[in-house]
Length: 458
Image 1 (spheres, helix red, strand yellow):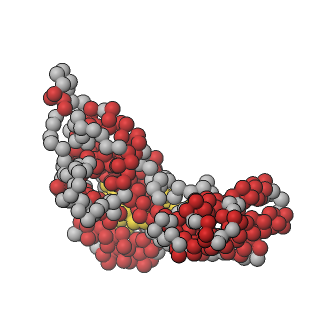
Image 2: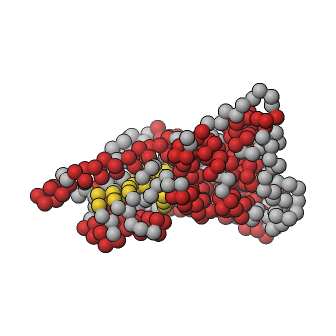
Image 3: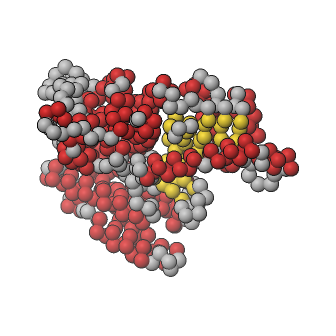
C-alpha cells in the first residue's frame, strides 16, 4: 500500500545539544519540495506500480522519501547505492529526506520506484518549479538564451566487429540458458545450443589488431566473424520456435530476450555486409550503433575535440537567473536553426509575454528566424550572422546593445558545463529511451532546485 509520508519527527530536537546544521541552500530546497502539486505529480506515477497499490499490501516506502532521495541523488550526482549510504549516515540528509529514524530504503527499492516516474511527469515537474520561481520573483523571463548540447548514452565506441561480437555473446548465453529449460525430447541436437562467443571474440581481437593494415587484409577475419554471427542467428531462431511451442510459460524471459536481440543482430550483420563487403556508405539514420541502446543517434557537430558523438541532442532554453525554463530531447541530428521559433513560442506560453531579448549562436541565424522573432514581439534579437557580412550588418553587430547581448548569451555555455559536470548530463547512466529522458529531466530539475535554493536562501 502506497503511503504518503512518515509521521513528522524533528530528530534535532530529540538529541540534546545537537543543533541543526542544514545549509541555507538545502533549507530553501526543502521548502520548495513541500509544494503539494510537486508531491501529487510523483505520487500519481508511483500509484501505477500495481493495480491495487493505493489500497492493498504492506506499507511501501513513503512518496515523500522517494521524491527527496531522488532529488538528493541528482543534486550530488550519486549512484543509488551511494545515495542510500549517504542518507543513512547523515542526520541532516535524514531530516531533509524525511526519513527521520526510520530505516533508509534499499538502493534497489529506490531504483525500482524511480523507473515508474514518466519523463512527461518530470517535464511537468520542471514547469511547476518555473511557476514557483516566477511567484518568488527569481526570474521574470525578460531574457532568453538557447543552445544545444549532446548527452551520450552508456555504450562503448561502436565498431562493426564489436557489434557482431556483442550479438554473438548475447545470443550465445541465451542459448546456453535455453538448453537447461528445453527438454531432451524437443529433437534439437547439441550443435543447436553451441555458444560461439569465444570464436567471435577471437576474430574481433584479430580485426582490432590488424585495423591499420588496410580493409582488404581485414575482410577474411570479418567474413569469419560474420559466419559465426549468421550461424548463431540460425540457432537462435530454431530455439525460439521450440520455446514458443513447447515451454512458452517457463521460457518467457528467454523468449523476450531472443525476440528483442534477434532483429538487432540481423541488422548489425546486414550493415556490416554493406559497409565491409560491398563497400557501401550506410546513412547514419540506418545504422545501429548499439544492440543494448538501439535508440542512440549518431551526431556530428564539427567539434574539434569530438568529431562524432553517440547519444541524443539536447536543446535548452535558459532565462535570466540561471533557470532552465525548457528542454527537449531531439530526434536525430536536426539543424539548430529549426529550434529557434518553437523555443520562443514556448517561452511566450510559459510567461504569457515574449522575451525582451532572445539570443542564440551564429548557427541559428537566418533571416526567417529574425523576422519570426520580431513578429512574435521580441525587441532585441541577438543572432550573429556567420560568414561575410555587409557594411550595414557589421554596423548592427557592433552596436553596444548587441555586444552586451552576446556577453549575456555566453553564460549558457557555462550553464551547459555545470549540468554536465555537476548533474551528470555528460553521459546518461540509465537504460532505454525513457530512461534517457528521465535522466535528463532529473538533471535539469537538480540545476533548477539549486538555482532556487541560492535565490531563496538568506
